[in-house]
Length: 238
Ligand SMILES: Nc1ncnc2c1ncn2[C@@H]1O[C@H](COP(=O)(O)OP(=O)(O)OP(=O)(O)O)[C@@H](O)[C@H]1O
Image 1 (tube, protein in one colour):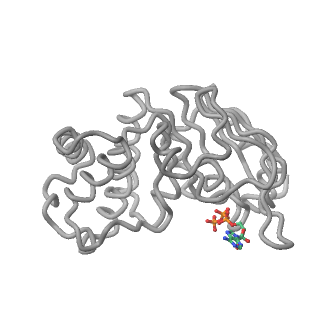
Image 2: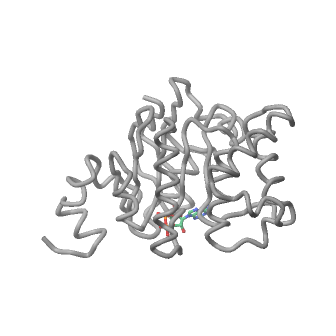
């Protein structure tokens, strides 16, 4: 297994946001995460990327216990992530954002970082915007840049947090096509997404979180047909 989350627990004050959540992700797999607003999905990402510390439990990446590593150390072991609200360096150009991500995340020389940035500009369709300030991009391009910054760190595991939210149907489809290409290159992905049909078009497996607990996990169609998932997530009584 590339990623192993074991009995993860996290509270903020009296609020138990993550309750004994365990799951694995195999190399090359795409895991989709679903759940109502506030269920604790982003918190789960924070526990994997190191943006938040676990109260109890452990996270293993490629067989190594990374529970106590800082976010930049986890990034350098191969965990890249995007954030629900994109926060690029707004005054820097798109290209400079990618070079920075490659230098610090992939720990390569500046020359190599330029090559990575060039390659990622191409694969994410951002070439035309390379010299624009990141802060001036449209929503779709900001989402693309969020993905591009994560890709520039050369991740083995890519964590995507609601990257299709707010996009038009056509834009979401473009993003899915892009993710399919990334998947085909062998990158392992975990994608939190409310745009269910986009998620279903690429996920190998689904995990549903409700009130910080694992509600269901398994093959996408089986999970979507689960009576409890339909009741909690879609408000449909079986
Ligand atoms: N740093 C924090 N301090 C206090 N409470 C927090 C913190 N981070 C998250 N929470 C709370 O934890 C709960 C879960 O939040 P989280 O962002 O993980 O949910 P989510 O499933 O990603 O939601 P959404 O689908 O709306 O993005 C929410 O009630 C949130 O207010």
